[in-house]
Image (cartoon, rainbow, N blue to C red; front, side, top):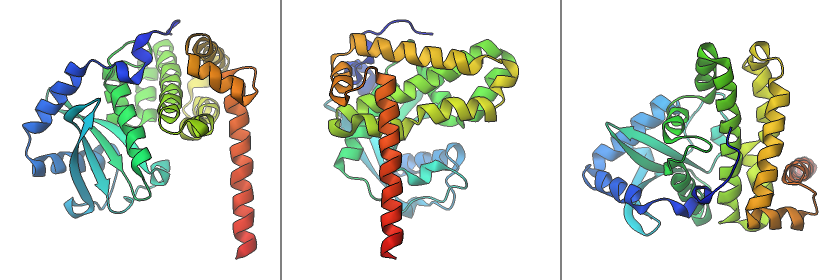
Length: 280
C-alpha cells in the first residue's frame, strides 16, 4: 500500500503532454468512428443494451486548456442496464483503449448539468495520471473494461495478497477521486457527495463477503479498515482543503466525517421518501 501522498494526487497536476497526445489521437479519428467506438465500448464493458448512434451525441472537450483532449458522449436517455447502480448516475468517466492509445470519455446522462460535466472531466484527469501510489493507469483501464468483481476475483485466484492490496487501493482511489472531484466542483457537498458516490463502508464490508475475499483471507476486513483509517489520516495531515473539510464538519477525523455524512444523507433520503408517500 501507498504510505505517503505527494503532488501527483492533485487532479490538475497531470502532465499536459498526456492530454496533447489524447487530442492528437482524437483528431485523427473520424467523428462517426469515435461514436462507433464509444457505443461498442459501452455495450461490451458497461453492458449498456439497446443503444444506437441515434441515442448518443459526441462532442470534443478541452481538458486543462488542451483543446479536443477528451470526448463527451451525451445520452438522450438512460441506457438499459440489468442490475446495475449506473442507471442512477448522471455522469461517468471512462478510459477507452484504442489500439495503443487511450480515449478519455465522459459519459453524460439525462439530468446532468455543467457541474456534472466538470466533475467527470476532473475524474478523467485523475485517471490519466499514471502515478503508482494508488491505482496505476493499467489497473484503471482494467477496472474500466471489466466489472470490478471480475477484476478482483481474477486477481484473487492468482495471488490473494495482491488481490487484497488491489481491492484496498481500488476503494481508496474511488473515495479520494470522488472527494477531490466534488470539492473542486461542489465544495459544500463534498463529504456527502463523496461518500454517496464511492460508498466506502458498504463496498468494504459487502464485497469482502460477497466476493469471498474473507474465505481466502480471514482478516481481510480488519486489514481493509486499518488501511482505510491510515490513508484518511494521511490525507488530513497533508492536504489542507481536506483538513478544512474535516474541521468544518465538526468531526475528529475524515473517516468519521464521511460516516456522519452517510448517516445524514440516509436520514435525508428517508424523509424525502416519506414526504413523497404522504403527498401521494
